[in-house]
Length: 106
Length: 123
Image (cartoon, rainbow over all chains, first blue to last red; front, side, top):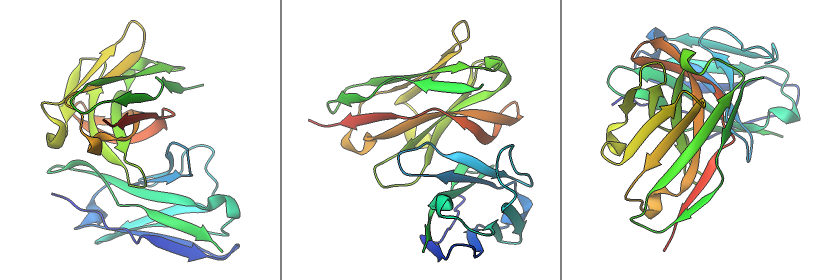
């Protein structure tokens, strides 16, 4: 089965850049989607493959190559504090989510 | 605007069944898939499977096959997820999520989510 590996936590000071990684075998050949989930809320897609959904700030960007996909959040704000999940579709495992990364804004 | 409104919280005993509904509005119900994703307390997201309302095609994660049934009523734009033989590990928030379709049998991603339904399984 296909596995996506995320760091459990990432901490960053306000105004700095946060990078959240998502590791998977040859993930660079797949479409990767990123979700933000704040406490008590449903997930929200913040980056879909190579695009930002309407309403998502330009501070959110993504990259994907080799065995690692990365969600980059520039000029981090307190409101960005949340859990972030990556997701792909794989022919052997269907939809797969990463384990999630808790972003803490110091 | 697009909305997915789910039914209210449920408390069930082990061995019972639960049926969660998800009423869609603000878009053409048959133009998208509909997935169910669950999240156990303090845990990550787990995709359970999906249904294509246009033709009723379903695909369930093997872990849930035999215990889950996903259906839709296109006349009311409502999706249902029926989970049987509940155990304590089924305690979770269950989300419905509008699914972008990559091909007729392959889901892509989830662009709209319901508010979630807490299902508690306890004796």
